[in-house]
Amino acid sequence: MKIQGITLIFVLLLCTAIARAQYQQVNDIPYTESTDPYAQERCKLDVYYPTNRKDAPVVVWFHGGGLEGGSKHIDQELKNSGLVVIAPNYRLLPKATIDQCLDDAAEAVAWAFKNAEKYGGSKRKIFLAGHSAGGYLLDIIGLDKKWLKKYGVDADSLAALVPFSGQCITHYNIRKQHGIGPLQATIDQYAPLTYVRPDAPPMVIISGDRDLELYGRYEEQAYFWRMLKLVGHQDVTLYEMQGFDHGTMPHPAYHVLKEQIKRLVNKMTTPLPEPTIKTVQQAEYRFAWQPSYVRRDAQIDEVHPSILHLGTNNGYYDLTAETGAVIRELKDFSISVYFNVSSENKLDGYGHFLFAFSQLAENSANEGPYMAMRLNEQRFETSTGGYEHEQIIMQGGQPKRDVWVHALYRQQGHKGELFLDGKLIGKNDNMPILSEIFKEAPANCWIGRAPFRGDKYLTQTQVADFRLYNYAVSNQELRQLNNSKP
Image (cartoon, rainbow, N blue to C red; front, side, top):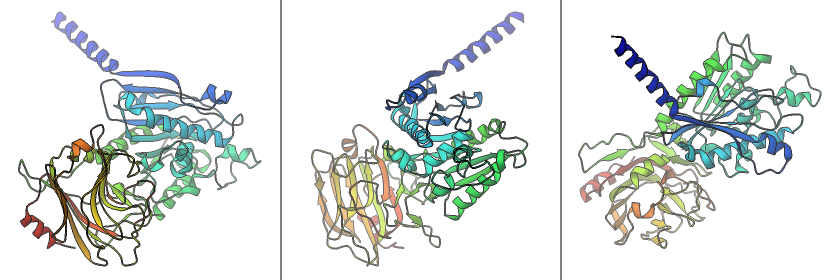
């Protein structure tokens, strides 16, 4: 019995050692391109990562310290959780300016986007989190898009912003530099409240106990939460860690952070809904609009939630890269969509997409692999780019206005056909299959106005009942779809 007990203890110790060996930490990695000596000293980061995972969520963790102190750290609560954790230092007041602090935070996030995959992380699952001054910094760079734009990152591509007890008015140590006391509120260009907007990434705002927090911090965050709700933000939550003061609130807040990461990742990694046709060869996926995937100023109709209004400023619905990874493997497929163009629309510009997938989210339509169904003032077409040469395969007449139109593209092998209201308007027998177009990376997918550069805008075009089939639909099914307009 003693031998068995010793053996059991040995096995448990071995399992523990193996589990620990699945994580590594690399320290003091420089992330800045600045030649400023203070930036060279401070702008370094640590990375804690699982060695046996890919596509893991990434947390960029900003330390607190009132913008005047503190140092990078990775608390135990974030370890052994399947997460890649990136903890940067940043320059501090008063030796640096607040603009330099914010610039450092943005550059650290840009480093995460460029390097997350080297450590088993996913750049589609980058969460910004931080305590106190760290929460303040991430709020500003996540809401005021200019900071990350400088480094080629769209703030809307962040998975979520999770500030722990972050100041929402102008930070008290910035006010101190101007002779303003900590209890005299100021809201200016250095206040996260200035930049509340409906299309920001999901937000999880976490505060300590309202009676124990620093300088009424809970009430600041409650007002911040309320203003985000009032401007129309669809995914913002406020938590109060009762019984915990400003310094101790991170300990229970880490649990909230990890649970919210699970919730949001589950939404990202469900690439396609369950097929409505349960056979081996045939499946139809009907996409219901989910608010968290609606981008820019696109909006889901409140009365008819099956209708998506694409808006005027590159509004689109993000089908996610995970969906693209599924679509790219289809040799035979069909895409069905209903759309309604207002008579007031001017469909000029480079081209207006109803459905598109592209290798890179920010690729211009003439810079990289893509396939798209698009319309402009003179034609409706399905086209591909980045595969030897652009192939515009189908052209029709001027788009109809103020009526619902059914568009269907189907491809079987290399044969592609485009139908409007059941009428064949063009075909091409030499279309590349999707796996040929996207050889190196999964596609990013959109329904609506995909975020390519150099294009003018859709103007309140409506889209409804988007469907994807993993086979070429029959003519009978085509007629049935054409008779099912909204």
